[in-house]
Image 1 (cartoon, one colour):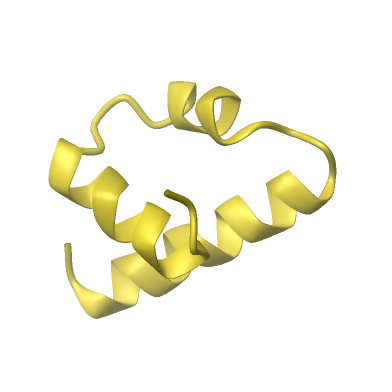
Image 2: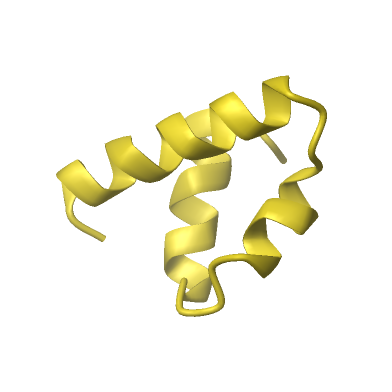
Amino acid sequence: MSNAKLKLMVSVFTRRMASGESFEDILADYPKLTENDINQIREALGID
């Protein structure tokens, strides 16, 4: 994933998680994310 896309996705996940959504629920809205993309987002958010 490009750095710009990663920053955007981390921003989206951070905002939505702050509103009470779970990581998995947000993921369901982005079915085209690869396993690598998901791992990069998890790492950036500090989620194991």
